[in-house]
Length: 305
Image 1: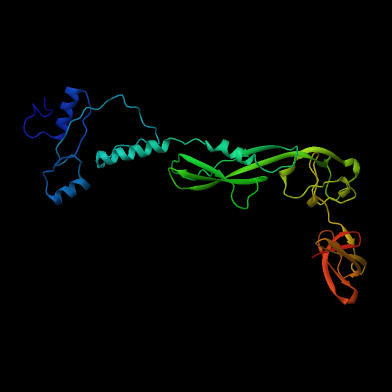
Image 2: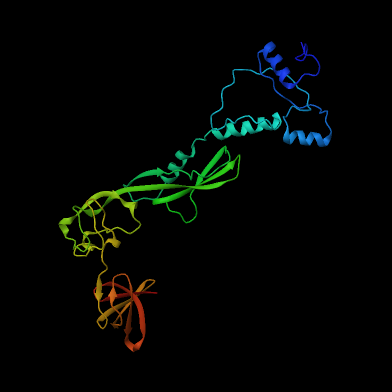
């Protein structure tokens, strides 16, 4: 039976809805049909009046066993809502936004980082960080991890993630590569300014990649040296922890060793600047020529050709 049968005169939208609820037990859906208004009145009705004014009303049965939307996506119905086709598209976009994609690339990133070059006998632990939560990435069916140019899988680093199928984007995820091996470390707390003694050092397993500074390979390189910063028990001794030694003073007679491919030439000279370990020093040699090299030992300067 037509939903408008039994109504006297021209039924209003409210009459039609009441009859539909009584006969079918469903809510009517208002759809658009050919209007009976002029173009100008049609525009005004769309902006300032109810959406059914001047439109034919179509009754559709609605399945009541519909799962409710999450609160973040449910919206209060508006009397000037757009047509149902646009509403359906908006609903699909909302549901898609709820689904949080997994991180299948985590295992692949760990495998890539585990291929880092490490000393023999060392073990690796890889910690994969999280992407920036502000990133809004399009769905991707195949993600390829890679090592960016100039990056080293040692300590704090990062790995690139590139979408090869489904979208086109490229992001970076932080990783921490820990490399555990034997190194000379402090056996007790050592304050800054203290002089290291042999009894204060011991071979222990430490994270070799915890700091980019080179490690002390032999205890003789640290014994008798002054600490620039404090060390805690179990912390490896590195070159940056030690105060640079002064091998000679300005005016001292030093030995200048010139090293080339397959040969070395030595001569005496007079230091024009103090010889601080690892820093450049100027020396005047025979004939008055001035050369610059690095102070490497007691009264010794090396010049590399």
